[in-house]
Amino acid sequence: MTQVLSHQNAPFIVFSDFDGTITTEDSNDHMTDNLGMGRDNRRKGNLDVLEGKATFRDMFKEMIESVSSKYSFEHCREIVKKNIKLDPGFKEFYQWAKSANVPVVIVSRYAISSYCYRACAQFAHGLVGISGMEPIIRSIFENLVGEQAAAEIEIVANDVDTSMGSGPGQWTIKYRHPESGFGHDKDRCIEPYRRLSPKPTLFFCGDGVSDLSAARSADVLFVKVKEGTGNDLAKHCTREQIRHRTFESFLEVKEVVQSVVEGKVKAEDVGGL
Image (cartoon, rainbow, N blue to C red):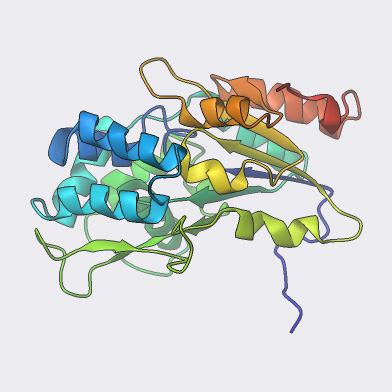
């Protein structure tokens, strides 16, 4: 059966990680560092993934369960709402992309923020009624691109399993691709577009170990770098000689993508090793 793609006629498509890329801090890392196993153990897990000693799927599940074993899902959601901020440049980037008919697809490894992101989009469309979600809508959506625009963004993410409840020790991660060592293999979201003819120009924005599977997938790879973090994706790309362009703000992404779309710059000329 032929797969129906949402943007199969688009000449340009931007895929982006959410946590730590669109947000200024990764919500999963924030929770793990402050509520779970702690920063040192988390960083050891990240480095084990980079060095091939562990899979991201197993490491991330351990991270999440170090938090979920002690705290309810609702408590973690409130922590994210209170502490996680958004890249102020993303709004201008998204508004330009929409005006230029360039689709933006969010591919997230998931934790609390991507759950809120998807649930609020459904709420905005009137598909579900979720008690207490108004503050989340304001903090995650309206501060980002506005409620209506946020409801239109395509999101491909893992999920959370609350089948046993949402209290401490009851909820956990539910992987999109549990058979994959990545848990959510982001390349699988991009790969069908690479096989199209004519093939669209594909952009990907990421920052960490959850983005390793997508590092070679796009025509242009943007890698976010932030002071005080491991900058794991940037290190991986340098070590593996993967062409990429580092950035600190989505305003930089907008400038480059716009130049490629307008034919001022060739995709293959963006970035370096």
